[in-house]
Amino acid sequence: QARCASQSSRGRPAPHLPRLPLPIPSAMQHVGVAIIALLAQQSVASVVAAKKSQLDINQKVYIEGSPVLGDGAGEGILNTCQGFARQHVSNPSAPEVKVCGTGIKATFYLRNRCEGYYEHQVTVGKCDTGMPSTTCDTWSPANDKRFGHYQSYMVEQC
Picture (spheres, rainbow, N blue to C red):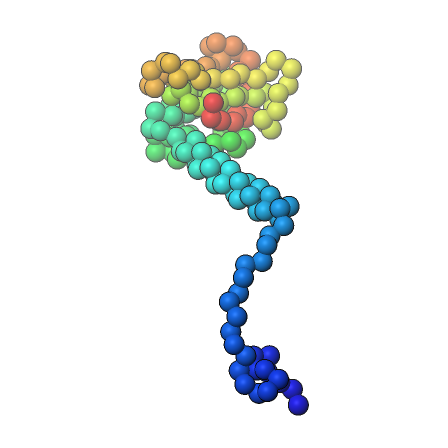
């Protein structure tokens, strides 16, 4: 006949003994501390990244006068390769680009895949927080006629 573990051999309930904490080996304590430190570090990094990814209202990019980042256009193109519109690629005197703010830059590429090709890439934008936040930088084929043949660009934070 099976007995319940909480009963003594005489059928009476066994007295409840206080539970003592089990000693945790030193190595396990170190692993626990390391895991907690790692989780805290990741949490701080994600907060910093979230703060950095939010652009202020001064960060804007315009192509031929139309906003493509900021100024109502949103931030969807940030860190994503973009192709110029067909009318900008086919017109050798376009596009005129303007990058405003001191927290972003736009790199423009000859090829349609946001890859450097010899000296055929141009970075527009002032990544200098000492300048006024309303600073704008422009570039167009008037600066370099080869720019009229560029096909793609990427906007990134400084």
